Length: 233
Image 1: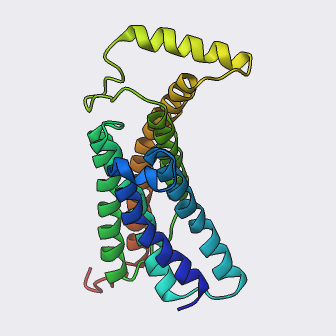
Image 2: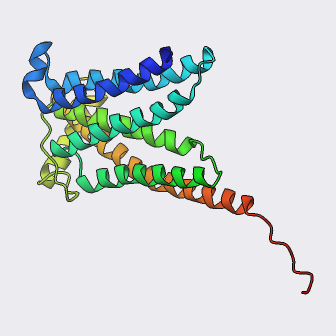
C-alpha cells in the first residue's frame, strides 16, 4: 500500500457515495445545494483522482501490481455507476449504456484469455479517450438535469416535441452570443454536449474494442510456434 493506491481506493469509496447523492433528493440538503450539483462535485473529484494517482505513482516510482489491478476497476465502477444512474433518471438511453458497459465486460474477458496465452494487452489511447468522453457526457447531462431538463426517452427520442428542440436551441445560441446565459440555456447546452459526448463514447467503445481484438489476434499469431516441415514432404 502506498499513497497512489490509497487515492485509487478512495475513488472506489466515492462510487456508492455518488449513487446515494444522485438517487436521494434529500442528500443535497446536507450542503445546501441540489443533489445534482453535489453529484457533479463528487464525480469530478473522483475522475480527477484518476490522473493524480497515476502521476504520483510514476513520479514517486511507486507503480505496483496492486495499483495496476485497482486502477481500471475503480474507473469502470465509477463510470458504470454514473451511467446507470443516468438511465434510472431517464437522462440517457439504456441501449447506449448497455453497449458501453458490455464492452468493458468483453475487454476484461479478452484480457484474461490473452494473459492465459502469454499476451499482455496494455491500455490504448483510444480507450483513454473513450473514458474522458464518458466523463464529459456524465457531467454535461448532470448539468442539464440540475437546470431542470425534461427526461429523455430510452428509444432515442431526445424530446417529445420538435418545437422545443428548435426554439430552445435557437434561444440558447442567441443568448450565448451576448454572454447572457440563463439556467435554461445551461440546460440546453448541457444536454447537447452530453448527448453528443455519449454518442462519441459509444463509437469509441466499439472502435477501441475492435482495436483490442485486432491487437490480440495479431500478437497471438506472432507467438504461434512455427510448425516443423515434414522432411518426407
